[in-house]
Length: 356
Image 1 (cartoon, rainbow, N blue to C red):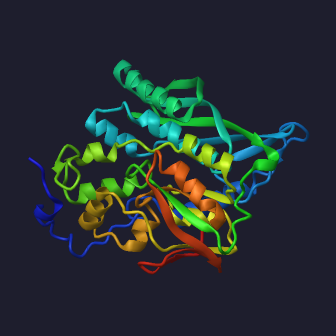
Image 2: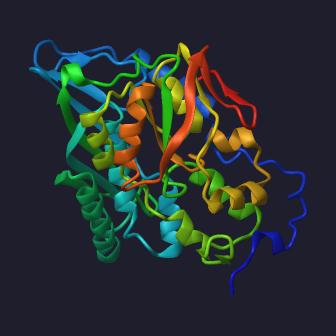
């Protein structure tokens, strides 16, 4: 029998609590400070072939390789793995692993080519390994990348359960890199729908369920299935659609809307304002989490993708052709525009972001 969050018994402090990502253990401002401290001491680059290409705020790192740029992106699945463990279902997290990396590479126009995975586990488990492999294979198919190897580390003194991460290699002509620097006032923002929560903000989502004493296998009327299965819906891989758009249209910037939500737009070009004026409709999972956790709008839009997994920025004259391509396989629409100013904002609910 499906349960509606509206009919759940009231936990004593639910009406007064306002859950945040920081309270769930992830402070995105402190994360940014830590990244800055790390990057400050990472100055070395080789000369000649393999020299680092400097790019502001990109989603992947690139080196020179003749007339080409080779890109590397690395990421993991995060605490979505804890949901998979609770559900005893690991056949989709491999898709998330490929998606988080391939989607980062495509943000600068690079075509993903190859992928390696890293699994750290406390003890070997054939069933878990096989299910992870199924997801990695499906993710590779969707992103059109070759799985060329990986590492399976047994670390009983370091790991409880397992962790899954990967690295993706991509390539692009150096003169075709999409850095975001060309984003300018008047450009249009196209939003590509997400498939749900993707692989970000799960620490906050899990905190919401924990505070409300909700089990992952509980069915919700609003979701049409258990909340655990909803949270495990794999991340949408946008590689094939975006490559087609890049081939046929001028694109000035692409943002992967992951952790930090709309703040990711600022990474493209800090000297303009990205204004979301007509957003994509968030999937029901976000409404459920908002209500159960009494999560403020600002927290929602700087933690989750809220229905928009990717944003593409381009001149207005390119939009019609881009929409024709994208809407064949993914829900897409114009969600906003670039203006003079700085930062990113959601004009409908009065949210502004000026720091990343």
